[in-house]
Amino acid sequence: MKVVINADACTGQGRCFGIAPELFDFDDLGNGVVKGDGTVTPELEEKARLAEANCPEHAISIEE
Image (cartoon, one colour):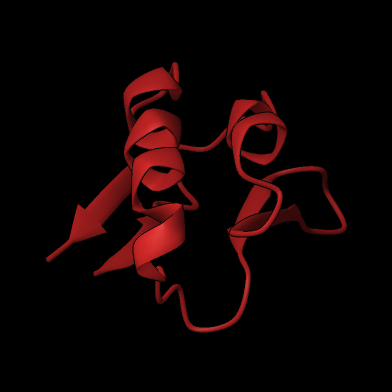
């Protein structure tokens, strides 16, 4: 499982980072970015899905 952020859709609300700082960070403009290659460990799957569901721009997607 991997998380992906659509950079064109992200407006930097920061909910992803607030929910899963282990998976997300901010770029120089304050927009969300995925840490590393986006691979989600089993322990973080629930947080990844919660971040996806709570993104107001629907910029986060999960690839199974």
